[in-house]
Length: 369
Ligand code: SAH
Image (cartoon, rainbow, N blue to C red; front, side, top):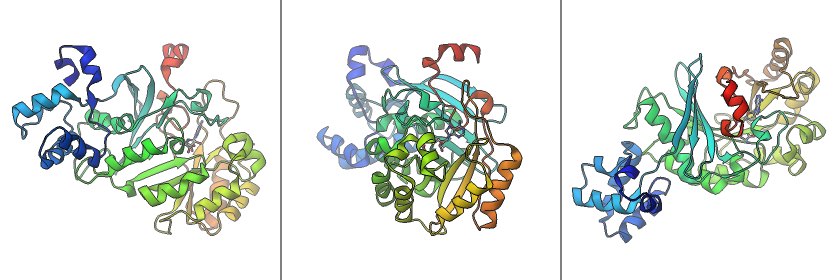
């Protein structure tokens, strides 16, 4: 690690991190540092295409320049405080940042792709009653470096540097980890712009899905400025129930949310909006509710993702029966919607949807795991 090569830790921690600043900012920083403009492009390539964690390995830069960079700047990654692998191949990392705060990041391998699930906040403010992360208070937003750092860390662990063009294990990104990405929009946007840059991590906007519980005023910006896929955590078809499951609904009710979806830039039949719907036994899983969902989605290029409820200790809900989920899915399917049931992945290591929580805040559970 470059931090260790610096003799004085106090100075090391003050060096500015070059990870997480955009291409334009890096160019400006290098110009101010007295480097020729193409040096910024070389650096970008080393950091995001080659995955360099240390200036010393950047052999296309003169040795003196590398030393000067190392004296002034850092290339910080989050530290891995824990790593687990599920029986199904899902991996979960507990990442620790400089101030001791922690989040979880999950990699879900599939036959023809691999999806990385990123966190955007430490904890969450939304308090959705079925979500374990929701029981953890918000500690703070992640900055852009900490969000990009999750992708770089996964590439480190998967051995995927330089950024491969084919046969990647990390092909897709979903912002479905801890936190509400649209309550930390600026940092999420800055991070995604770095992740999408074709000369670096090079993950295209078509392979990125941002999930929101419905921060209506920010949804249009996601489409216009980032152009990534949108997923909405809907989970209920009436405001009365959604107010209870997703309390943010009291601020932005279903009709406002669906209007924002209707107007989402770039939504089309080829690029549908995903509606996530957690299946809670006897709460939101009746055939009438499936039919009402069909009615609500009319006119929106939509697909539905049915998520079997993933239990956590003390959760006040149970997962719907297989028969109820199948019947719900069938009604959507008959109305012309794709409505796959999301296979729970990584449940054995508490890596499935809604199970993420900083283990450090939960010493008893961590010890018994
Ligand atoms: N705050 C954003 C990002 C989190 S995405 C959002 O709400 O969309 C995490 C997804 O998992 C959301 O769809 C969430 O509703 C769902 N989820 C949360 N807890 C769950 C649980 N226990 N079982 C299944 N899905 C859950």
